Length: 307
Image 1 (cartoon, rainbow, N blue to C red):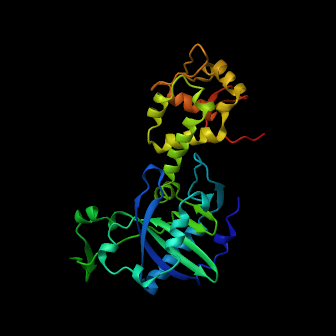
Image 2: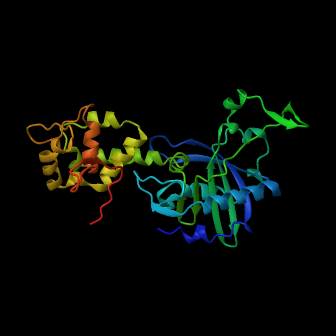
Image 3: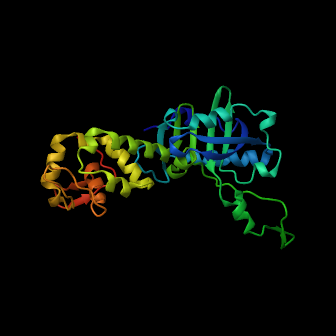
């Protein structure tokens, strides 16, 4: 999959640049997070360094794959998702106007910044590069540190606060697409994990899913708020194998031969327990596959159908 032109063709070098610092709150129970942003003046040297790091991050993306709940990328790839599926529009809206009253006027507006946005403009085109901040921005972490500077071949106490940023970009917002080099930070900044929790709640309410089990309580307890398990349950809903009578019949017939520990009641319903939930999830993901060549049985992280 090609990198969206809105990112690959964007003129970063000659773009206008504004830096925004955001703090995040709320977002519980499926509500949208609240982003509080302020823009800050940056000098030419910092602007040049930021542009260089963004160009480097873009150049490091050799390929793009569609975002999926179980999809993973490597150092040379990124994931792609439509921005409308996320809360990215809130960031775009907040950074649209660098009004005087939104300018940073005190250190308190900098400390505890959650993430950092570089807004680039080139003509009518806009590109946002987003990064989570590290511990140098956190009050509690800074109190445990003594800041020092190297001057005249010696270390001296540095009374001025300092902040650092990784040269990497967690995700780009490019028009209606989001290109994601760092999936975990993307999900954290945009509260995308909450979308997973909402999806799991919806799945539990589906009659076709709930009626496949004698009870859902043990499975819900097993998944809890674990982000990996929530992704897996959302993928189960996307795949929808539980809706197929043929799939469920074969699952009852062949689970033991494929090394899965599952228990069924007299009506053929799955009986979930703390010990069997992991295998139930593997089965409904269709991630336990047998090789026709070696006859070995394998777990696969992301089953991609080839025919």
